[in-house]
Length: 230
Image (cartoon, rainbow, N blue to C red; front, side, top):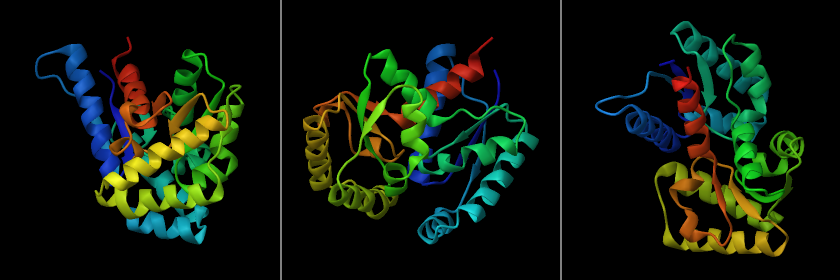
């Protein structure tokens, strides 16, 4: 079994999901008391969130590069950035390490194409929805993103940072997100990407009128596939 390296803590709520999903899948495949070989560098999300608001992407790149090097030094054989937004810095992270980075948008694109879809709603932080690093990554695979309107983007971003990242899952927010997905469907989305690793905490298939693409689970399964590949 290869060793997985996870850059987490952004937020720790979704990092917990990664740890559970990866270990449960390894146990399911290997049986018994099997669990994953996983090295974790968990960052202080307060620092990261402040830098995001300030637009200090250079400073965040330095932090993630250091985390990638630490993971490589401790024996990690692949890298995961446990957040969609910080994949804006995926090229810098990959350049800092000799081990492969498993890109969350790539495994998501694989799942979308496997279902024969080419237009999906994209829900995530405002950085993910409004900047081009994620949309263009999917577009390079022939997938068009339907983006929520400005008022919807503001509310999704608020729910993520003020509720989900703090362990709050209000029923009213779940209902609102379901209505937002219906709005994306009306505008041509064939599925919806839960493009923030906290969104699966509150939105599941039963909450959506469209097929959902849980980026946290897809990313975690890609790590298991890598770790257990011959």
